[in-house]
Every structure is written in structure tokens, then in C-alpha cells.
Length: 218
Image (cartoon, rainbow, N blue to C red; front, top):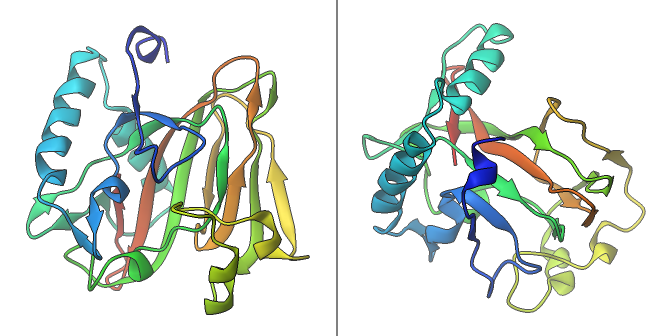
């Protein structure tokens, strides 16, 4: 986190992601075009790798996270590939203004397989590096997307109005520094706005392949 405090974060596409969310690294969601991955994703991954190396850390933070998952998993945990090329390892996100209610599902958002593997399930991993004095909670509802939910989608946005989840069961996590959360992002979820210090987390997607491997991507 000390290294990240010395750099200027980029922003997700503000026409699609609002309120604004800052990031260090690259996410494939900004390069999704008609269900495919745009060619611009690959040079962005290379640039992001250089920028992470320029932080001059003596370890790879995403590798550390994968190693921690590996302790609890009997099959390989590695960065996934698409067309033989390694995906981005992950991203540091700073959603100080929160994330809208939304879901993440590679099988629904991308045509065919996103990775060179058949995925059976998907998870999201977040490791909290900095947390605000108040706010910043992650909220997850036991509700997955169904066609009728589209009536609640916000205009030109990845998100939905909170009414989409109705009275679904939910949990709310107030993060602490050094804590990690692994959950199923196909359930609708959101992040509440922060007050005070920055809310920064390392994050990546985790796919369970039919071979038992856990494959990650940013």
C-alpha cells in the first residue's frame, strides 16, 4: 500500500462505471465489446505488468494471493489464459464512492469461453489494503440475475437500482486491513461509499475449471 500511495490511479470508463472508480492495473471488463475481448486488452495487460514492476516491490502481490489460495486447494491455482496468452493477474481498485448493485458472470458477459478452459463456477477475490474510517462495506445478496431484473438496470450503466434484490437474504462485511473476501459474484453485490481514508483492495476473478484448477484473471 505504501508503494501504491506514490502513484496516480487510472479510472474505469466513467460512461459505464459511475460513480467513478479508480484502479491501478487493467480489468478485462473495460475491453468487452459485443461479448468478445477487444485487441486493445493485450497491450494494456503488458503496460500494467510494467507499471506493477515499476513499483519495485520485492514480491508479486497477486502471486502471494494465489499461493494463499493454493494452501487450501488440492489442484493448481494459476493465472488463466486466452488463446494461449496469459490474462492480467489482477487490479488494485479504489471505489471510494462505492460500486452500484451489480453482478459479475463471465459465462453471461462473454460469448463462448473467456479462458482456454471450461469454467464450472466463478468467484471474486478481494484483499483489503486500506479501509475507510466509516462506510466501504461490501454487501452481497442471495439473488442471481434473471431476465426480469433488466427492468431495474440503470441507464448506460453496469449497475442496477437496489430494488432489483427485493427482500433477498444478504450479508454486509465491514472490511479490515489484511482481510480477504472470496465470494460468488454471480450474486448481486455492491460497495457502500466511503468516508475518511481510502478504500483500496487487490482484486481478481477466480474460475473453477472442469479439471479442478482455479484460474484467475483481472
